[in-house]
Length: 164
Image 1 (cartoon, helix red, strand yellow):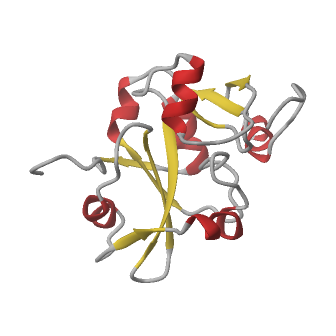
Image 2 (cartoon, helix red, strand yellow):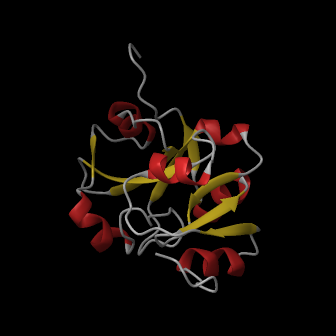
């Protein structure tokens, strides 16, 4: 919960250091349910609000997948995008140990280790997107290019669709 408007997260410090522009939105978050709940609470677009998921591949490597909050990751497409036979989402209890972030505060910027990151290609449709700021109650508004450049991400279609 980010009540302190002066809270600087690791993600913000990294963006500052790399001179990548962003805006911060602090909001009251007593309980994290999911990104859709937060977007509804803040009247934000699902399409431009992105969630961060972490998966582990057959090779035991971790990968970060970033996609709109109302979409489901297609694990086959995600695995293909990183050259793995298969990937599975990290268990919630392991997120903090692997990333340094808690569920609801996980952002692709500033994890304990920079993992290969794939962002859904729809990010390119926006001038600005919303991601977690690295703590509950903190969001970052950032340009897609800024995020892609910051984490060295690639884009791909990683969303589950019926009959695809």
